[in-house]
Image (cartoon, rainbow, N blue to C red; front, side, top):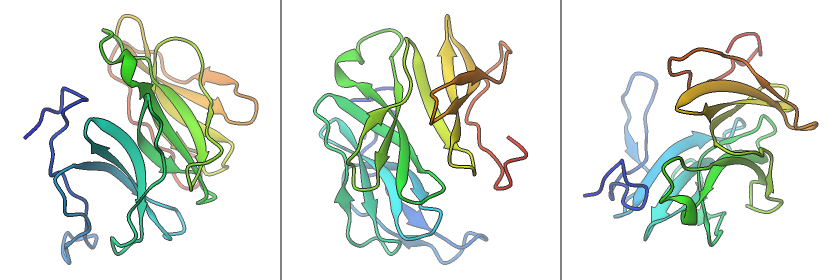
Length: 189
């Protein structure tokens, strides 16, 4: 039960699995009646990062690669975190978040945040109006690409320098430009 179109009622019972690259050796890692999704490994493989929604609140969680030691790392009263990925250092996380109080708005403001893997040292790295989401770090650990939704509903990819906070728009097209990722050598997006 649930509705992917309603952030307050994501489908419950969405679970996390692992498999080999051929789709075999499937192992279920979570088993509950909540929404578990947006999962990724730390680059060094020491932990799994994912989003979990419990009673309408979306937070970031971690677990060991075998599914044990599940632990909540964010618990922010008005923010909904998700879509998180590790930076190349395997210790810093970049995520998007929105305020629960903004869910009724026609265009939901979202921002990007950096935080330590234990949830501490949380700081907002995007500013301005609009939706900032789908972050992906560059291999240099200094830059990240993400999607910014421009009025009226134009999805464009931007590059953010996480040290200077300088932003640069990379795409300019009316079509949906989304879910950017950067190759491990940093040469392609």
